[in-house]
Length: 409
Image (cartoon, rainbow, N blue to C red; front, side, top):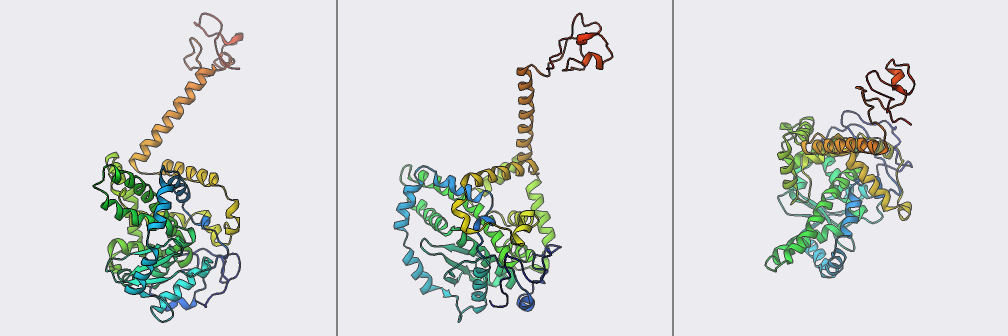
């Protein structure tokens, strides 16, 4: 779309203030579609690297996946087996291609999303007949973006803009290849279930792919926010995926409180059930995605990114995976430390107790912190005697029967 021009560094020419009350950085939106869209000027992010919005666990999970025994072999085999040409012909023959003549409003949003994230080539875009709301970015050589009619009918203009930005984020991050392989492996697992150990081998890779897939969805949600630049619209879209097209019966704030209750409620048994429930899924739960995106939109990292301070793809060759792993470890440590989930609190308490016990054990081994005979207070310095009112040198204690045995240096 041509209503906005780049102003450099990812900052629009309407000012740099951050939206409040859940609105994105470009200001509030009434969510009624394109009525006020022409008045909006969205920021662009020239040369932005996918590292700017990727979830801390996205890239390390992909690296771990690649290290999985046998994955590279399976990847090479499947790259030759997956009929990508047939896939493209299928969508071309049995779906509607989005372009200047069909679904023109979606075409404009796609072009606009690619310009905002500086994606050089606009991916082929199709609408396929399916009442279930869904969107995907697949393909090995070139990404293809597909949305279902159920999704088009469910979302308004601004919500759909966030979804298209979500899929463009997948394309920019290079997620399409691994997502395509997951879809292929999932169908293959059913076909080889009768082969001894064959299904186990495939499902091990499928499970690893699903774990990464869920993290990649959180990354793409952030890309959708960067494109739509309307937090309310992004959250509404996720809420509609959970509750359908009943916006007048739903409330975003209540939906976020629902997510908070899910994350914090119950006991350890509920925590285990959450893990078991999410394992077979490719996507995180809608409420969890909304809560994750809402938290990220209020971080300093997002504010800096919105004002043009972000990693550039020209620097990607110099980036080190160890930095991503450290960032991921710090993220998970903070998540466990601040989590309200009963199991995570238990893990945090056990870790804190183990750390405290380890510190005491270390002090004992070093000879520090050892109480002197007769010192009820357990003083650990040679001057404890004086502190307790005993003027005698060496810290002898009344009734201690001899020189103090404090172990201070």
